[in-house]
Length: 396
Image 1 (spheres, helix red, strand yellow):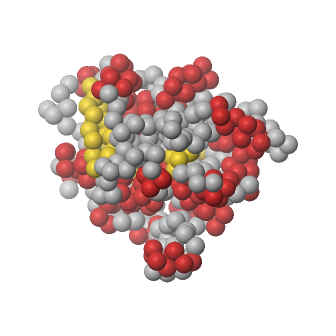
Image 2 (cartoon, rainbow, N blue to C red; image 1 turned 45 degrees about the vertical axis):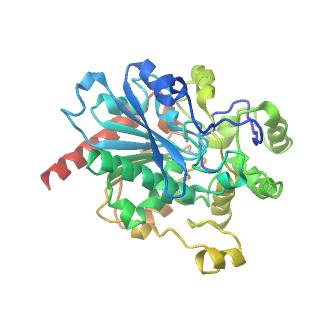
């Protein structure tokens, strides 16, 4: 399981009647209205349609500090969140500490992605959230449909290539998508926080306990399709995972690794928005990656693989197909229990290019998006990378 789970009182709830997402949010309940505009930033809501019928929300953010965006254009940047998260993840700290606000203040044309199933997105053209088919997807579809649709929309609006920032599952989506030439060609450069394509050496004790319990298979066998971590109904389940096996007094550390710079005083605010739902199939796909040590499409089993892919095993996402000309920047941490150093090195070995790297020994998984020191430790370096790519592009 690749993610940031903002749960100190861990919650699992599989929705049937009650849901955290809705097909349409009222104008005063969307991300722009609740978080971004109250902070003093201009924000517009956009709805896009994927080629498999999902209605996603994009937010476009700009800062009054840099004047008229249209008169002083800088490149668009797409921010892609991780598992059990939504676009709010980039705005959970103060404007001085949150990457979404910082990029807007630096003059970038900020676009905020929200994948299917999250609170901010808008459902499907024909499927209800209660339909099991609505949840028939994994990160594979998020990469090849959601992420691709976001990039196409932004490119159509701005008529320029896009900078990408991904965190956690957002990096899985990015790396898988970049292996497809028609997607990679829309991207100017990418910055990946806690980069993941392999999960074989994940060392999160809580996640490994769930993998060994075959929790993913149990959930699907029970006919459960949506997984939503927002109810105390699941406290007993989490207790059963911890009981006698793990010390879950600090559950966040048990899941993500020790985070050096997490602001505990803001937990209540984080929990107003996080976590978002995902699909049981997505969890199964991530657990397959852990068990098999592969970066591949979803494994349906031999018979259905033959029907789906025309081969016995699921096709791999070949990182060697990512264009050598696509500039990559990666930041990773020594205390990250989800993006393990060995797996990061495996990713780097398979790439044609040599990404620029930033290693932070004391950073855990969630520090990369909500550390109170992230601006100095990470974001200024990332912005320097984007600035250098912007200059290079203008000289072509």
